[in-house]
Amino acid sequence: MPSNFDLAALALKATCPNNEILYDDKGLPSIMVKIPKMTYAQLGLGSSTDVFPAFIVNGSEVDAIYISKYQNMVYDGRAYSLPGVGPKHSITFDNALKACTDKGAGWHIMTALEWGMMIAWCENNGYIPLGNNNYGKHSSESNYVAIPDNASSGHYADRVKTGTGPLTWYHDKTPGGIADLCGNVWEWTGGIRTVKGELQILANNNAADGSHAQTAASDQWMAIKGSDGTLLTPDGNGSTTGSVKMDWANSKLYYDTTKVDTSTSEHSCQFNAITYNSETIGAGALLLLRALGMMPKEDTIIPTNNTIYFKNQEAERSFYRGGDYRYSTSGFASFFGYARSYSLASIGFRSAFVQLPTA
Image (cartoon, rainbow, N blue to C red; front, side, top):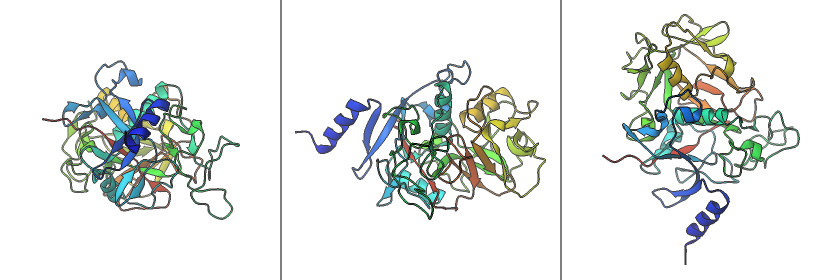
């Protein structure tokens, strides 16, 4: 007789063929959405048939990435993707990262390249998911509401329970999709940071392997060469020669290899307004920025209510993505740079899994 977990997996497969139940080192389940290996061209990012870098871990290709179907809850210190529960919130980046990596090899916090992959996939398929960015509903929808997880005075809901919104809140508008990538709680994102405005990442999707440290002092962080998108060892001060930096010009995020703006203020603009210096940011770097979900395509369909926020004078900034329940100006492509030690009732996270390549 099959176990209850086996029967649950069979029932899930019958209704959502691309969903799987994966188990961690404690034998506890998470519902995941399988994303098969794809190329840049298959994601609508040019014509290259090279494998999209989210599917390259430790120098080898992986066949698939499993993304949590739901924003994660935490039980006994570990992250889980389950429906109809309140998402974990008020958590720092390091604690969110640990809740994922403690689950076992291949488990990790969703990375910037995985976010960029989902943005590219959705754009290429002509649909940008909605979600809870207006106290229990999306700002463009008047009739759809989700099940409240909590509510402040005067509101129907603040955060809502995972996966309880309409199909418009799933990345592909089907029950088999990934829920709540837009709104509800911001989601801490791995494998990316800034140091005094210099963009730094881990090579390919090495952030999917917990053995690659993402601490502030880690030697795994690499800067991006503006001329061709190859990786550089950073100088530690955010001033690596020729590296991609986040500058501020004409009220927009402006990528360049130098930084003119010295303001300590927080900057914000629309995602689709981000621009770059075409004389210093070459095609390879531009493609990598788009792969990371940090730069719009020229023909982007991301709506104007996707606002980004950053500071380019801080010693270190981690990133969270996707918006929250409070701001109708936040959405799927939004991102916010803040200290890794920050926590707020509107910030959570989402785990992912890859089968790590063997030597």
